[in-house]
Length: 231
Image (cartoon, rainbow, N blue to C red; front, side, top):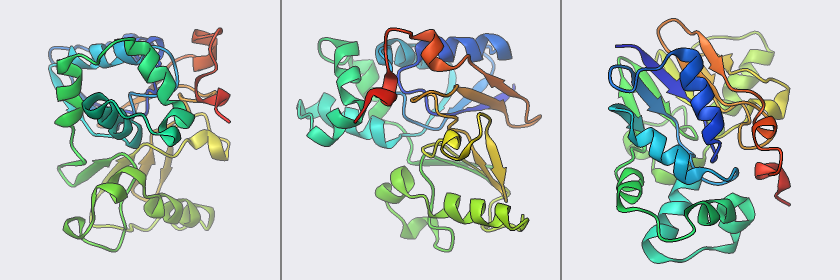
């Protein structure tokens, strides 16, 4: 069984399919660790979520946008901050109520996942605190670890920050600092390569570190703006 890690999808179903095809991903035998944010941005949130549900060995880690969507699915409440950050695309993708298996997937999603001294989390962690001392907001939103790792990288200091051998995160687009590829800093891998905006979707084999990418997502959805259209 091969194990892959996947960055933020943000409704880009076509990009997800491209990554699967390029990697030769087997929905029955391969494992996929998804770092969160299937929701908000591009128009095919429903289709992307349905595709993830077909993966037999799926580890779904909840992202901050998934958390917003889950609140809407359960309560019908759509806060303005969510709509302003791409939530409208999620609502339009479903057009009606979100299916029960989609709600169950989001409800049962993990805040983080640990396997063989590797940590997988959407936003990040506080690097000098124990996980048991941290909460959901940190795991979904925090960028302290990412910022510290990137700062050390600029100083050519690749020394380990945490007790984990590898940490995989989404949430922070590498395109924000000029990279279309996943970025490795200290023990941290940044896997969000801006698929929600103008970048590509990235998936990586965690054993070989081979990376598989979609086309730039705006090329796949020329009539839509994704999160780039958000003011």
